[in-house]
Image 1 (cartoon, rainbow, N blue to C red):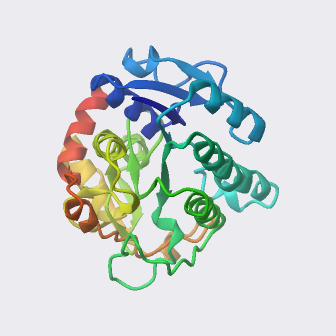
Image 2: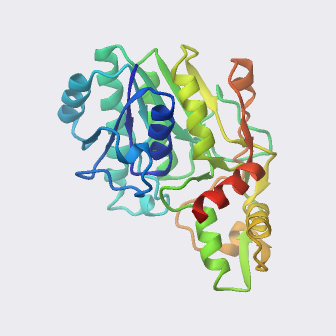
Amino acid sequence: MKIFVTGVGGQLGHDIVNELCRRGIEAVGSDLAPAYAGVADGSAVTKAPYVSLDLTDEKAVSETLTRIAPDAVIHCAAWTAVDAAEEEENIPKVRTVNAAATGYIAGACKALDCKMVYISTDYVFDGQGESPWQPDCKDYKPLNVYGQTKLEGELAVSGTLEKFFIVRIAWVFGLNGNNFIKTMLNVGKKYDTLRVVNDQIGTPTYTLDLSRLLVDMVLTDKYGYYHATNEGGYISWYDFACEIFRQAGYTTKVQPVTTEEYGLSKAKRPFNSRLDKSKLTQNGFTPLPTWQDALARYLKEIEK
């Protein structure tokens, strides 16, 4: 089996290629850079075949995938700078990357009759209420440009293919790139007290754990919509920050504040990012470990 992975310069794509190689599955990584430009950790992703590809070029996408002829594509690449996506001059770029390019990949997959995994987000929902969002819920009301364009990507995939997995994730952290944990550790070294929002609720997702699930998934034909974050219960960003500092041995104090009190953000954030993941076990997939355990392992990983 051969699997083409987009966005290997990011957190999730990096770990997926490593997981594929660990299992002896042929992997081809791709990103916009001329050569792999992620973390130089000496892992399999740094040695795996790599293709420089502009996903917004429909012809290039079609020609590249036709030449490589993968059995599946795992599409991780996206515009993920949520606040920058709100800037008027960026909106067309965000839509091209998250929506149009996803459609190009879906079209190429249809022509090749290959599977596609599309990584989506809790931001496709409006984040109201307290009930966990179900993976097959179609009550889409994204609050910002990022969420809207990721939803457009979802619709491009579901409207083009039958052999697809749309997997929504949230609060992602991994080795290759920036994330909330790295930010907290950096600012925690500089300040005695920090303010962190306490009214946005969800669950973190460790890309190392998620990559194992996605590879398990793509080897099956159990297509459809899924939610995948770590187990361990729903928490706020404030709860997450407190646990980060506790496990890291920091004495930094964390002050809970509301989103309104915190201010700063250009893009509206969902208050309710609770994702129901029960469909995973219903279809025979192993849930991710707890986020507390994932955090402990991640802290050790970034110390290497």
